[in-house]
Length: 467
Image (tube, rainbow, N blue to C red; front, top):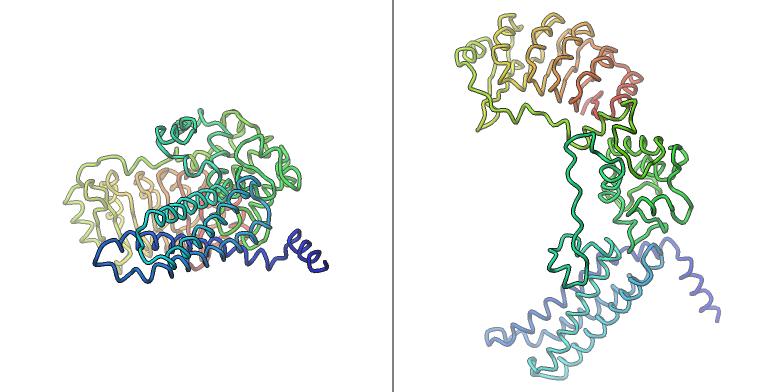
């Protein structure tokens, strides 16, 4: 009686160790699948004379299938004690798993008693084992990924046979920001990609469903997870911004976390009242998050690479090579170029900067590190308005020269390592709308200024130390 009471309490409130053991279920569950598939293949193969020698081993395959199925059932039961799963699907998954075990045992007994491995009744048991294995696996997939996971991308003919409605037409890709809906084009795709694997109709961790706006606003076991207009009080935002090592961090279980852009967009959405619909441009009248959203939706893709340019003047290229440049063609089917002066052991000549402007149409990568550039030199470099990557490291340039670079609107990477720049960076970055990466190590940019740069430019990765 006491043992029964103790066992009941143990199962109603499972310890961390029990859940730990249960989480081996996804690993172990593949063993019976492998053994059963191998046994069925061996069963078919032993009908051929050259495979007769395998017949004595069939019973061991079915025996291993039964033993591993029993272990998978035990660990699966322990895992189910954590809750968070759809009750009906879990019920049938458990008992179909038991059916797999029973069918394996039947095959084991039948093949042990009968020497002829190809009687019709034996094939009935083999078919039963395979059918129950497939059905159990299907239910397990539903528990993990949701009931629509298997059929989500199936052709409509297959969906019709399965008794499902035709596929929903996907939303058209956003090509103009004015047409972007705040929930359907931003929040819902984020939830689907990063959150619904644990918060779907088959697996509702914390009884929280994130497959629709209504279910998201309903919350879970601990109440509301979104408080419209109050970011700090919203549990969902708290969890996605915790350190990844924290127990409450979402998404959990080692899944890919939300990016800084996605977090920034969710923060803006909640602070805007977490509306269920509405155009982004109408909601962000102060243009606080427009650039982040534009970047997230890929609407600011650089057009430089898609343009076809004519070959550069060979005389100009030869002159730059004589001046110490290395010139490389970057594409086989286009004439876009890289110019690298970093290996030259002499200061760059002003005439070389003038020659570079003759390549402004083709030049997209430029490395002028340690070229002894001055602030005045940057005025000429600013004419190279197709530049996507610019390395100015190791030059005595200051904030005064930085202002010229505002014209480089296609710039994606800017290296200012070991220069004299400081607060001028903060003034420059809003003008470089496509910039993704900036190197500021060994500059006059302090830690506090770096923190401010990051907080005001969430789309940019700042490298302020040795990588």
